[in-house]
Every structure is written in structure tokens, then in C-alpha cells.
Image 1 (cartoon, helix red, strand yellow):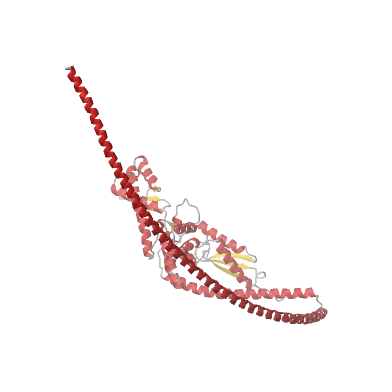
Image 2 (cartoon, helix red, strand yellow):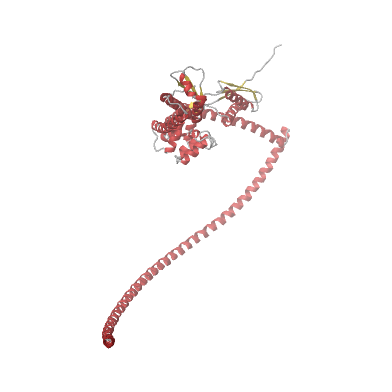
Length: 522
């Protein structure tokens, strides 16, 4: 058994070796054949590549030759063009040389003429010098004779003549200035009166002075207690939320809302009316109603701005500018509602622009926006005209409108006639009877300032402000101020009043000069 197993193992080993040997020979033979095939294929590829390389080389040579020929033709073409250009330039130079030669000949001829003229002038100068010397001698002789006849020296006579000429010139210039000023004032006043009357006649506005209080009517006296609340918590919450003062006094069935901000008063009034209608009055409900009413009024402000622009037929207004226009409804100027005032100023500007042949759209737009600076946040300091100017510039308003807004109180220089129209319309709107209110203290100060300005001029004896400050009468000393200087004095006082005072409308300056001659018969 063991011998059989050994025999089997030996046979297995021999068979394995024999199979391996046979497999090796087969693989070597296969590999040799593949190598031979690969070599033959490589030789074929090399031959094909050589053929292709030769054909590619020929193609490139042809391309290079064609390119060379094209370059050669282009070079020859450019050379011909340059040759022709040089020929033209050569011809131009020859023509210029000929022109220069002609001009040179002309200059030489003129130089000869000038030399002859110079010789002639020198001769004339010598002759004139001799004549001037003779004239000086004659003048000296005449002056000597005049001094002997008049008994005055040369300096005294010159001084006397100069004084007479100066006095005569002053009188003539004052008379001329007076005539020109009278004529221009007459013509300008007629035209201005015509334009302004046309504008005023077509604008009839009702005025109502803005108050600082609003009244809410109650159904019964019991509602006052509910408004106050337990230990006053409701009224404190209401005043804190609205920013106004709520006055509950003995006025029957009424509550007074006091505050300088008309927008906050409007919020407070509407919120209180809603709270009374709802019946639920407590701090939380008060805050809710106030917030809701404030949102409603903010939307109404925007609508008011749109309505004002539509009323004046103004388009393409920036939304932010529209909001500022709407805020004017809740602003006042000297007690006059700012939105109504601005609409009227816009209307007056449009009418006057039509009369003067200007663009009415720009004039109306300038008039509506002229006081928009009064609606800017109070924390920003500066004159309202400048604030409005910056606002219009920020939102890219027309330069004419921007300048009119900034210069209607002369804070900046007026650049167009539209600025003067806005200034005039603003004065007209504010000067109408009942349009504005003025405190007694400010009124008295204005009259005193007016009299002080008139009294500051030389030759003024007395001053009287009359017609509620619309006219100033100036009494002058007749020995120091003559009739011609009186006219100049009135003009100077008016100019100084314009520069140093602010007032609605216009102030008339009347200079009175009285000369009394007294004689006694004995």
C-alpha cells in the first residue's frame, strides 16, 4: 500500500513537470509569433509615417512659398504708396517754398513802406513838438494875464472850478438817478401789479388759524372717570402713548387734548374716540388702538401728498417727497396750515409764470415744495429753506425747483426767475388778512426795529411806524437833506430794512422834508 502511494506521488510529480515544460514551450512559441507580427506592423507604420511626413513637408513648403509671395506683393504695394506719398509731399514743399518766397517779397515791400512812413512821422513829430511848445508858451502867457485880471492864483482857480464841477455833477447825477428810478419803479410796479392782481383774483382761499388744542365730545360725564381709570393709570398710559396732554376739567361732556404737534393731536383724538366707542379702556388696549391709529394716519399722510400733487397736476414726484408733502397737513406756519399755504403758493406761482411766459409746471412744483424743509426731523438743525434744498437735491428734483426752494428766503443766491416768483407768492399768501397770527411781543419788536433802522441814517429827525408796520414815515432835517437826497435816503432805508428784517408783504418808506421860512413885520 505504501509502495502504491509512493508510486502515485512520483507519477504526479513527473506529470506536473512534463505539463509545465510543454506549457512553457507553447507560450514561448506564441510570444515569438506575436513579436514577429508586431515588428512587421511597426515597420508598416513607420513606412506610412515617412510617406505622410514627406507629403506634409511638401505642403508646408508650398504654403511658405505662397505666403512669401503674398508678403512680397504687399511690400511692393506699400512701397509704391509711400513713393507716391513722398512725391506728393515733395510737390507740396515746392509749392510752399514758392508761397514763402512771395510772402517774403511782400514783407520786404511793406518794410520799405514802413521805413518811409516812420521818416514822415518823425518829421511830423518834430513839427508838432514845435507847435506844442508854442501853445504852452501862449497858455502860460494867458494864465499870467488871467491871474493878474482875476486876482486868483492858479491853484485857487483850479480848486474853485473843481468844487463847482463836483457840486454840479452831484446834482445832475442825483437828478438822473431819481428820474431813472422813478421811471423803472413806475413801469415795474405797473407790470408787477398786473401780474399779482391776475394771480390773486384767480385764487380765493379761506383761512383758519391752527389751534394747539382739540376737543373730544363725550356722551356722558361718566366716561371721564373711565378715561382717568383707577388711580389715573388709563390717562397716564394714554398721554405716554400719544405724547399729548389730556385735560379733563369742569367742561361739560368734553375732554381737551393739548399739544403743539398736530399729528400727535390727531392720533390722540381718533384713538380716544375709538376707545370710547369700543368701551374697553385699559393700558394694553390703549397702546393697541394708538398703534393702529398711527398706522392709519401715516397712510393718510401719503394719500394727502398724492392728492395735493394731483390737485396741482404735478407728476413724477419721488415717494419720499410725497410723504413730506403729506406731513404738511399737520404742520403750521404762524398759525397758517402749511399744506394749504403751500398749495396756494404753488397755484399763485403757476398763474404768475403763465403771465410772464415761464414754465408753469416748474413754477407750481417750486411753490408746492418751497416749505418742505419745515417737515424734516426736528433733530436736524438749519434754516428750513436749506433743509428743503438738501432734501430736493437728495431726491434729484429739477435744479430750478431745488434753487427756488433754497433761495426763497435768500439763504442762497437766486439763480432763476422762479425763485423770485416763489418768494413773491409766499409773501402774498402769508400777508392776506387773517392768514397768520403774530404775538403782541413780536409785533412790538418788529415796529421798534423798523424805527431804529430808519433812525440810524444821518439827517433823520423823527420816525413813525404806521399802518401796523406796513409803512414807516421818516422826518428829515431840511438843512441837511435836500429833495434829491431825500429820494436816495428812502431807497437806502428800504434796502436796509430788506436786509435786516423779516416781515410778510411789503413796507413802504416815506421820507418827509419840510422847509419853514419865518419872518416878522415890525
